Image 1 (cartoon, helix red, strand yellow):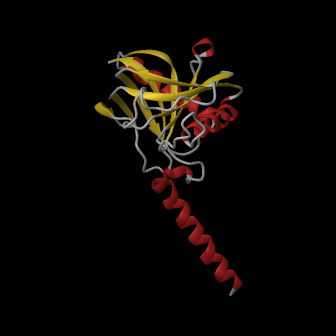
Image 2 (cartoon, rainbow, N blue to C red):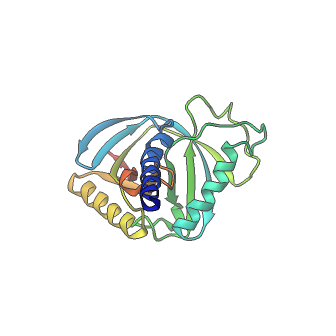
Image 3 (cartoon, rainbow, N blue to C red):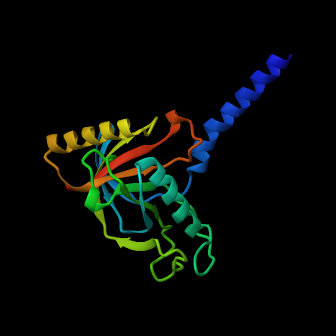
Length: 204
């Protein structure tokens, strides 16, 4: 009987975990048009957007955790107006220009950013209470992206970045800047249900 009940509980928790990722990720995402699609690769035309970002130092994984706390506090009300701002996806991570790695992971300084909901503007967003947070308007741009599920270990991100660079070279695309890493799901989402991306700005 106990084993049977334990099995029911495990199945229930597994079902909740499967549902939680997609449900929790049904939030606003950056607007873009797909210019072309080739398997896991896409060329996208992004609309202008505003990001809230913080620069942090350290290895990639600790840096994104610290950056998430800093920017998350801003949208949850730690701003001069004490206003709540809706969560969006993805959480973005990018090496700073001074330490930008080709593989997307070998850096010790990172920018962590959230895209602000489209109903806010630079004029209406509350000023951050934390001086480490910057609000930046980004122009429309094109990006080449690779999408993948599963783990986001440094090794996998480095491998996906290499695949993306090889694809861009094969297609004759000119890419610039350091890789932009994008993570769409909360950490408790089962790996097989996660949406992760590596992107590069491109002239395409």
